[in-house]
Length: 233
Image 1 (cartoon, one colour):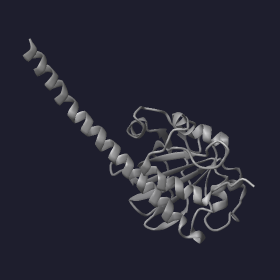
Image 2 (image 1 turned 45 degrees about the horizontal axis):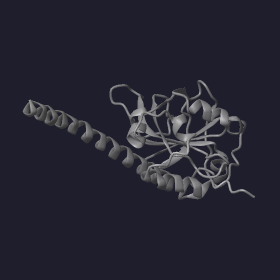
Image 3 (image 1 turned 120 degrees about the vertical axis):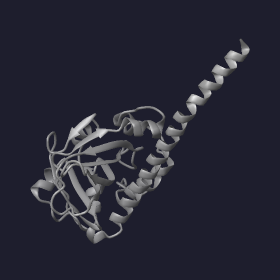
Image 4 (image 1 turned 30 degrees about the horizontal axis):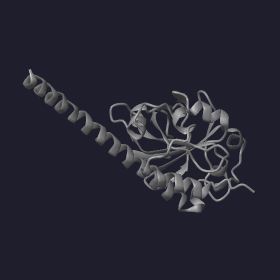
């Protein structure tokens, strides 16, 4: 009897090993993606004359960074990528722990020549943030979206930029610029949230809580804070 129980316990323990290995691998991949997202923002903001204007970043309610959006070989024009959303902390100073997102489909415009593209989005108001944090959101379908301006100032404050809920940029083969992502869909990535936080939280639960951000997210949050401090005067 004791022998049978011991054998069963050993078998059950062995069965959990692959699951734990998979969890560790998933967490490693998410952390690597978080670090890459931080590197992408750092590189983009390193050249003021060719970056996202600081004043726009300072006004933003949320930011989305999707490093390495890939073009699907099986469907012409299909795109897919995984990244993160972070929103302003209460009071406007600092950024929340990141939630995981997936971006799918959409037109990336003629200026994208590479097979892999970094995408950045700024959500400019609370209404846009609420839509973005829903389980599924289609850019241009449920909210105004426009290509973001590039440079030290937002002198390109056209009506489209001033009234857009979401501004979008992309970088491919070193070329950075505003881009229209109308038709692209963003979804919560519950699996990646589980890898980061231990449970399948939706992004509202992540960004609206006081949850501590993963260590791998610190470089990304630091670069956002540096260029958009929203200091109180």
